[in-house]
Image 1 (tube, rainbow, N blue to C red):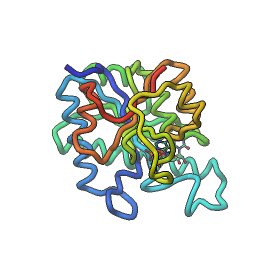
Image 2: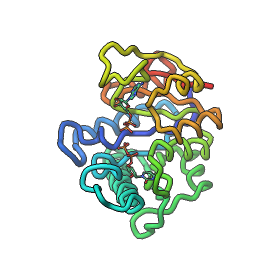
Image 3: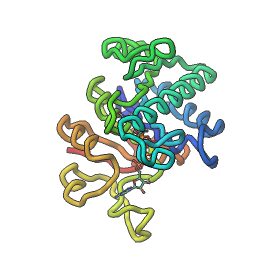
Length: 236
Ligand SMILES: Nc1ncnc2c1ncn2[C@@H]1O[C@H](COP(=O)(O)OP(=O)(O)O)[C@@H](O)[C@H]1O
Ligand SMILES: O=c1ccn([C@@H]2O[C@H](COP(=O)(O)OP(=O)(O)O)[C@@H](O)[C@H]2O)c(=O)[nH]1
């Protein structure tokens, strides 16, 4: 039995690159989709928010000197591309997915309409939320928290490059150790950077737990959904 009936899964855009320099690595996206398929087969309802960092990051690189809001809209469009790629890969793997966009782009994907999203989830379809929150100055982490709260997900699962929340940034501090559990208050007090602050505050206010785990570790998503010891749970 899965530990959660409905989850909001946040997939790192950057992780889609696999070992490539940018873009979408075929083997990587197929592997991610198969992992999602496994948990849908357990009877878990899955909504996905995917980032865009593999295509465009609003705060870096080619966007230097650009108006921040314009760069962020480009970032949101990048998440639309990733969402389309993800949903199409799901289709190829025999799943049914629907993409819903937070910005109007009707010829490409349907708009986000909350009751419609709920209906799809009840029908067992995977819903992919594209274009983040639809607003600049936010991130897809915040979109994950927002949509997670809206659809009544029991948990936000952040599948990322690290396998949990550490005592310090593990990329900078080799001595950092991983928490199995940590409360929102403690994570804030220790200033641990895992989700951005807006996303974090939203989840805390809504008492929506967050599980941080590795997107690169095969089987980790299923283990998380089965309630096994994997990653870090951030709780109230
Ligand atoms: N205390 C911490 N525990 C774990 N990761 C941390 C911590 N502080 C900073 N990080 C960094 O956060 C990064 C993951 O967050 P983020 O950049 O938002 O990834 P994503 O692409 O999934 O959105 C990791 O690569 C890690 O280096
Ligand atoms: O609600 C949102 C979501 C995303 N973005 C933009 O889209 C980019 C890609 O998303 P993110 O960095 O969260 O993706 P990831 O880190 O998962 O690759 C961000 O940098 C922002 O520029 C935004 O402006 N508003």
